[in-house]
Amino acid sequence: MAPIDMFAMRECYNQQQIMLCFNGPISRSLIEEIGNALRNYMSEEQAHPSSAMDVFAVYIEMTQNIRHYTREKNWSDQQAGATVVVARDDQGRYVVSAGNLIETADGQQLLTAVAELAKKDKAGLKALYKEQLRRPRDEHVATGAGLGLIDIARKSSEPLKASLQPVSDELSFISLSAVI
Image (cartoon, rainbow, N blue to C red):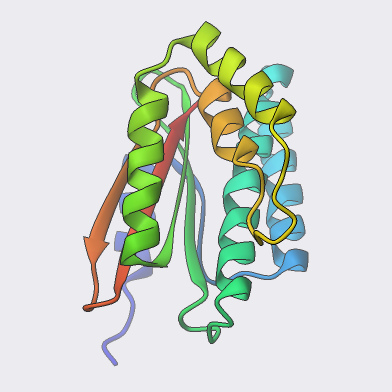
């Protein structure tokens, strides 16, 4: 293996204003530890409390969704790995991004859901959230009520962005980003 150029990596992270980056298998305790580090970092940066709470909530929702999905699939640590990045954009807003392997059909469904959410304004997202809350849950379905993705869209200051990159015949890599 070629040596890792840590200085070049650092410069790249600084140029892209990456505050936090994680790549690897993600456990409940790791989600919590990274969340605490993120909370402390934002506190030291004196982020506005509502922004800090939204960034934290979006980070938690994204990482827990990845963990639940990969556990449901009984994937190995290598397959269950996630890439999570919290950065700032040129306007000083926070960008929370997460990616993981996903079955391609599930990834297509997620892209469709993100595209549908992108069509809605804040009032439409709020109404959809309330409607979803009232909808009865199917106890035989392992996934949640879909509230998490709607909540991420509600906290985001612009439409969510998602992409799907094929990895094999059955798997793709899904990337989701929210701007807070």
